[in-house]
Image 1: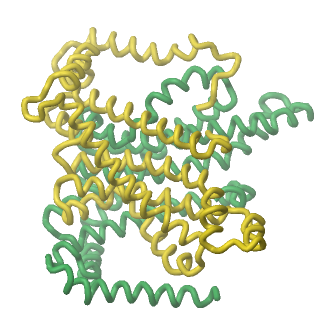
Image 2: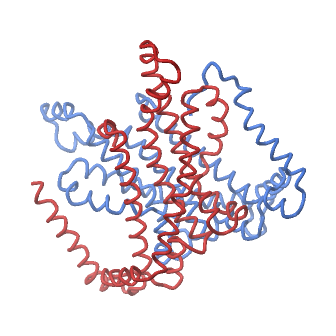
Image 3: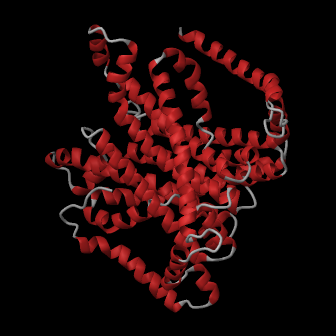
Length: 254
Length: 264
């Protein structure tokens, strides 16, 4: 059963592509400008991969995401763990976090442009903002859960507060932190594309909007696929880190 | 986040929000140059913009503009979101329940998933033009995946024991689906619907920034062009408040439909 799956799936994809290429044009007569045919997309893809501008856009977008993500991780993990272990810290920040959290990062795009102008700074700010909340909330939940479940056991075995923190709370919170990072990076990647569509003159989000205004639908679709692939790449990198750093966790949460 | 513990008095919790408000008021008193006002509008200016947007009747719409934009956003959100539920729940049940759908449909769904809703905006614009259809499509797409993923998980998570018991007592396929699997999967489906609504909100703002001539996303984007930061802030507040309210609504729905389920 199982070995037959992928050949059949491949066949299904080929059939769908063939229908798209040879049947859809007879039904949808608005022309390939709107429904790019697989062959057009393939052509668009090749010309895109050959252009230096495309690669510059990829580097720009990924760089911005990683920069914003790094800022969000640095602040989010420290603050989240502090929230998880210290009720006073939690009480100090929870209202503020709860007030800011419901606002999607996209809603900050216009004000970020007013504050920081069009370009790198506002992009990094927006990514950091989008990635921050999943990271801080997961880190807090991880530290809180660990401190509650294993803290007393460590206490009865005579561990001091520093030892408890370093050997129990931190490793216990690690899988949660990494989970939050994965979610945060995913949100960040979504935010950067959106931010570059409105508030940048470079990056993949800008490139895809530009392709659209030149009515190059084949490039638009190729860019979408690239955006998807980079998203997968970023996520699977963190997944690998997660498996390395917390191998015992993967079997519990997907 | 979690509830405050004994150490946390209400006063302590209010320190930071109040400090931020005081900082805002103080800075806006000190920085009075026009350029500074553009970056950090004084509270009374935001209040003025809020009154203007929410109370003054717009000559064209016959209604306050904020209400018009909010109504347009909510309408698009509702259409896209309901369409997502209508497609994702049956599809998720099929994928979770029938092996054929799992083998031949699920991998296609999973292959589309990494392409985020915002990446579809340019293509949707080319297909549907600037307007409501583009936004509804983006909301639909964004809300679809969390709902379908959770529906699949919910159906698969249904205890085999229940299903076998039902089979043993002579239940037909359809009855099993309706009486055993759906109720068992419902809490998970509702969680997916709640996540989907959140993603829908993100998507609608992103789509309205570029793809419409109305809605709250359009409002803040347009206000930005006019360097009208007060209106940007008012629009952001409206987005935040509606986001909270819609999430509360989903939570209420959860307590009504699955009262036995513990919730976060």
